[in-house]
Length: 193
Image 1 (cartoon, one colour):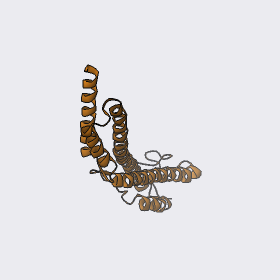
Image 2: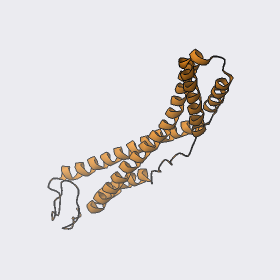
Image 3: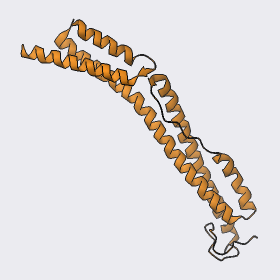
Image 4: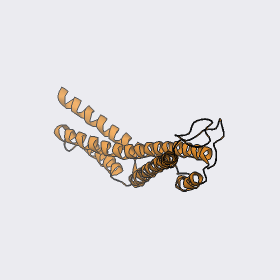
């Protein structure tokens, strides 16, 4: 069995200065368990990436905006596959270093993917929120200003923006705000009269 140089980083089950692991079963089991754990972290990163891509694809057809890029997974799967070769060759220091690096990159990629997913979902949610707000003020306008042509025109413009795919969120938000202000102004005048 290859030896681990004193002072190098080692896998669990190895201590500084040991020439061989204390137990052959532990020597085999611990690196395999660590490789499996890192492979799981890469799998989680792949799942988060896929979720982010799905959310991004959904958002792109629904809203016009610049979405942050979904991070790539820099060959993590290939690197995980190469780990067994390091284990079989007894290259414990290189194996430990590569395990740490892959795990850190997988965790970071998963978090960046989750953030990209949250951003994409939030944009579609914002469009849906604006649609709900427009409908709520439409109901209020009906009570106070049914037949008001200015309100009807503002409503039609806002609705057109919100139901166009992809939806221009900034223009839609402005149109809904304008409609909301007009409804509030009209309802305030109606109360005073």
